[in-house]
Length: 348
Ligand SMILES: NC(=O)c1ccc[n+]([C@@H]2O[C@H](COP(=O)([O-])OP(=O)(O)OC[C@H]3O[C@@H](n4cnc5c(N)ncnc54)[C@H](O)[C@@H]3O)[C@@H](O)[C@H]2O)c1
Image 1 (tube, rainbow, N blue to C red):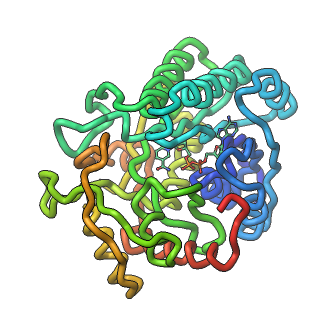
Image 2 (image 1 turned 180 degrees about the vertical axis):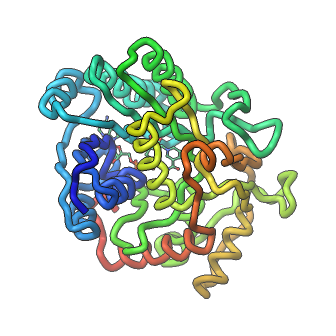
């Protein structure tokens, strides 16, 4: 496909969700420039992307906290059509211990980027999160569900990021913004050439499951089985990372086709279905025929009990719906774990 749909700058494009989105953008006919400081990823991912798509995206190693460098870079690409902003730090527990790191990296970087694109007609997609809803009073959550006070500095940076973008889009008519509130992204590309590369002990369930299954971790711990849910474990809305990546392409297209109802919009990006931790474990064992060594541990502080999305706004307005199911998510995550076991990456 010819690269004539426009140039998209992807910050954090060598990271987990960013790399999958670069692939979908390229395969939909966009040209891509990646900015990443490799804080939580490796430059080898650029080769992996090129192996999937046959096209090498431009890669620029840059820290978005360096305001002048960011402005210089944006000016060197005068024909940027859109920006998809993934770059951020994302560990809830790390943010509790080092909040300034999170406000600096997640909020200052966003402000630097917005300064750099001020006055330009840019379509901007922001990585938000279902953490903005906290523990919801009603399920499923819609985009109109009131936000709850954030329970961590990380969650707060997503709420602040949304507020900054809403104010900026309202003040500067050239800017259009779609904030995507991701539910729980899991899985890997069907090629098994890109996937999640957690540093240290994974904080999310699925990489913990696959690392335990392959023998990198001795045991998986289920944090609590005494919650008020059918089997006592927490419930999440897991979304395949490839479906999530496609939602970014849909968001850019919505802005390019002038279909927005407002200069700033939010969309829930999930499947609309909740699965418990124990359901995920059982599904993984069934699909892979691998017996997982797991035990029930105490509850983990700060965990939401249950959350899943109402995705009707994304279906109707963004014209996007998740296509892949939990089995697809877990089998692709397992294929990726086996791939990296044979082909270790530098940030393992
Ligand atoms: N993975 C999830 O469960 C999840 C859920 C909701 C929202 N999000 C958000 O989605 C986005 C992407 O998440 P991910 O899972 O792909 O994370 P990731 O850590 O794999 O990717 C983030 C990338 O940003 C880069 N980066 C960080 N700070 C930077 C800086 N100052 N300058 C340049 N590059 C920088 C990192 O090196 C990394 O490659 C983040 O904003 C995250 O908060 C993730």
